[in-house]
Image (cartoon, rainbow, N blue to C red; front, side):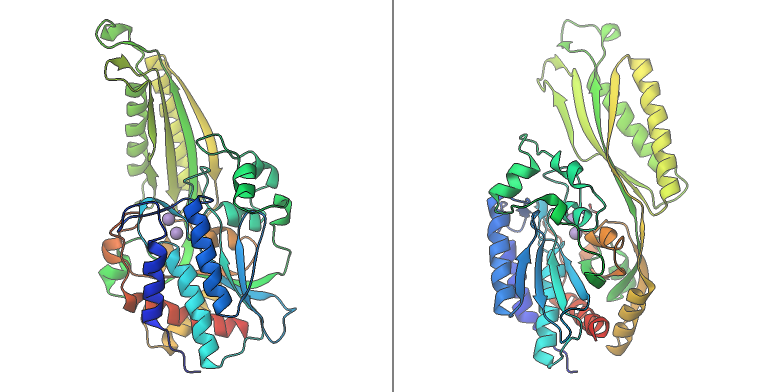
Length: 412
Ligand code: HGY
Ligand code: MN
Ligand code: MN
């Protein structure tokens, strides 16, 4: 099988998709169910139809582009990722797995390969938590990891419900229909940029993911007492921002003191009310993103944070509410997938190293229902979720080549 990736075409498609964005280049912003997301989806579906793939979507907007195999009724082999992008992001996160997955299928078509198992390219809805506060919404529903009722309760910052937003974006039907039937897929492989520095540092072109870290996220609300910045003396204050700041630093300390470098904690959003120069903050809301490769260690760090929350609340006489958004277990990638990826690397004389994914991905949830795995390609300095995110055409080409080889082996 003579596999050739059309590097130039793929590069142009990545560049074109990057311009379907709500941010000034080189930044990319593409929030799920926004008009821009809608435009990007239409453009992507056009590419899939040009490749002769049969396209369908489910009630939450997960999109499936299928190359039917010679035995269309047996379980399919899936690949794919996401095209939604957080504010002020780069052009490769998720996109490499979607457009690279499409190019892998096209390269197999050009090589004369005929799959026995259909090959299906998936575009997952809302991998990023930007709009509804929880990541991997589409793959959670696909895998049955999130009940439809819980999804129906989701609203965005403007108070618009998922139900309303998805229907306005053209995705009708009951969320109960999203869950994939048992045996729909026999395997799932996702190509993604590493979003870390290891592959570049070790000068290795391919990372074979062995496990995906356990993500958890929370919302905190600190209620203190407001007042005049000049007239209220310090001993009388119950400043919500000072309390929140102490808790945020306690979060950082707890993560650093976990006993392992694998524990990461991030406060990415912090809203201060009333937000006036000369008014003491009475309320602060902030988010916590807490992850670790070990579930036990992550939850032990959470307990330390919760103890700090109680101490600070009592000491500063403020009320601190904690709301769990998600707390997911880590995923082990399937041996049959990691071995297929390793054989594909060997066949193409490409070095590879096993690695942990510290970012979460849709594969985290696909692994709940089907043997799943991921392959990483380097990204410059490990930068991601920022406009200078970059992966070279050569690295992307190598990733697509290994993906195509792996899909062919799994679909034969
Ligand atoms: O946050 C993550 O790990 C992913 O990039 N959404
Ligand atoms: Mn991301
Ligand atoms: Mn991603």
